[in-house]
Image 1 (cartoon, rainbow, N blue to C red):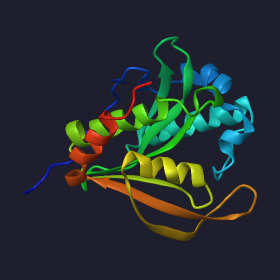
Image 2 (cartoon, rainbow, N blue to C red; image 1 turned 90 degrees about the vertical axis):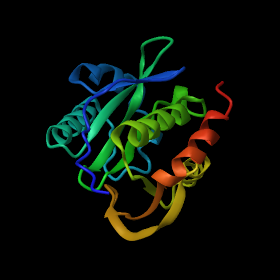
Image 3 (cartoon, one colour; image 1 turned 90 degrees about the horizontal axis):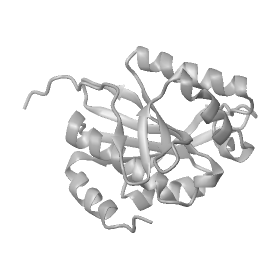
Length: 199
């Protein structure tokens, strides 16, 4: 079967707790309010510590969107309209029907809630059921045990480790663990996510 290129365009994805809306410069103040806690950026190669850093982070996301390799979202708390964090499709390969879900963070107030799982569900569902993705990738620092466990709980398969993958801002050499969900696995992963408590 010959597949045409994926058409990846800004979209609003809405669940019970979270609304993912296209990231805009107008989200900057909310991103700063939610996202300048130092622990959020512990495992990120280039941390965000100031409002200026967050502005640069947002600008880079929008530049990547303009070039067609990313589609960034603000994560909005539906009940209050507050910005909780950000996530994106990145490393978009339209020809090969592949996207990565990454650059994901939520403020400390919303961690260990249903928000992250629901956001991943919305992104996976859109990737497989609307975009026609064959593969969705996720990756994390090999030392980030909490993130690795969370990705496995979603139902992604661990594929291996890219050794000496990145140099972080501290000079530490990061090894990166890759995970994926492929289209044939999506029905099972979807059922698993939909059966989880919605609290």
